[in-house]
Image 1 (spheres, helix red, strand yellow):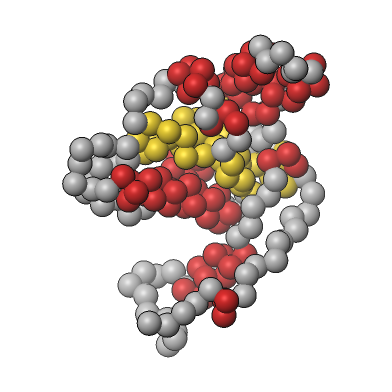
Image 2: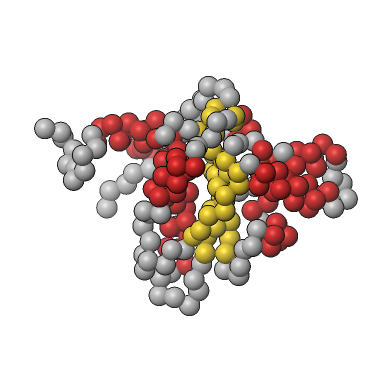
Length: 197
C-alpha cells in the first residue's frame, strides 16, 4: 500500500519524481526533433486543465512551427532593424530567435476586466498554464524553456500577432531536445521559505 493517497492509477512516487526532476533547458542550446502534432496536442490538452476560477478560459495559444518561426524572426528583425544603433549582428540574432527550437508556444493571457474574478487570478491561471506545458513537455522527454524577452512587450509585435485589448504575452515556451547535458541550478532551502502560522 502506498504512503500517498491517490484517486488515479498513476504511481504517486513516480509522478513526484517527475516533478522533482524537471528543469529548464536554454532555448539557445536546443535542437530537434520537437513534439509531433499528436504530442503537441496532448501537451496543450494537459495545459488547459489548469485551475480557471469562473471558467473564463483566460488564455489562448499561438503556435510557431516550421515557416511560422522564420516569419516571426523576420518580424523581429524588421522591428530591431529600425533602431538607430541596431547592428547587423543584432538583426541577424533576432531573425534566428524563433528558430532556436523546433516548436515555440506563445501563451496569451486574456484578461476580462469588469468581472467578479480578480485580474490577478486570471493572470495566475495563465502562469499555471505555462508551468503545466513545461511539465507535460518534460514528461514526454522534451526540454522546454519559458521566456518572454523584449518581443513579448513590443507594440508592433503584439499587433502583428493579433493581440486584442486586454491580452498580453504570458510567455513564449520553446520545446525541443537538449543539444548539451542539462545542468541543474541550486534550489532554495525550504527552511528559509516556510513559516508556520
